[in-house]
Image 1 (cartoon, rainbow, N blue to C red):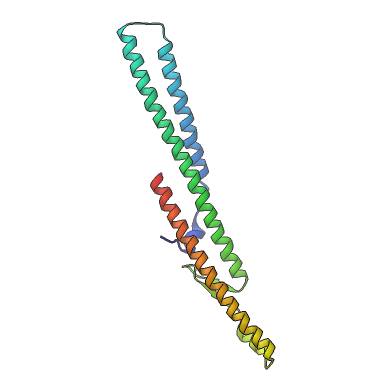
Image 2: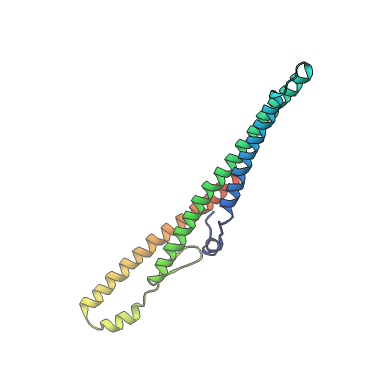
Amino acid sequence: MALTKEQVYALDFSNMPPAAKAASSYATSTAHDARTTRDTIFGLDWSGGARTVATDRAAREYTQLNRLSAAFTSLSTTIMRGHTAMSDLAGDLKQTASAYEADSYRVDSDWSVRDTYNYATAEQVAGDDRIAIDALRKLKAARAQIASNGQRTLQKWASDLGAADLRTAAAI
């Protein structure tokens, strides 16, 4: 699913790093709490059936909490990978589109690139000068190729960004 130009310009990835940091923090505190609970129960000076039941339960909870901690770590990693992939692609799309637009190209919502150079004025200035007319013809062909290549690149990046978004969402 390729994102449109308007969708890309509206994206805001600023909440992803804090969310990843929070998930990482939860992972750390969950693992710490698991160790503390287990070590406390195992360190108590007691014996018998109650100790066995308590240490067995502490060991099970330690395992469960460490799985939870690993899930939070995985979530943090997934968020940051998604952030890096998506923000890099969105940045590339915006920067490249702006560069085309600054060079007399139009970039449409579907990332189509159109040459908007004012050939009519250039042809008037060239008049009957065959060299200038030939140079304009070559310029027009070169700019058409640049627009075609740019469109292909921008549309691929927009599609890659949509795919990265879907992958990140599915992984989260």
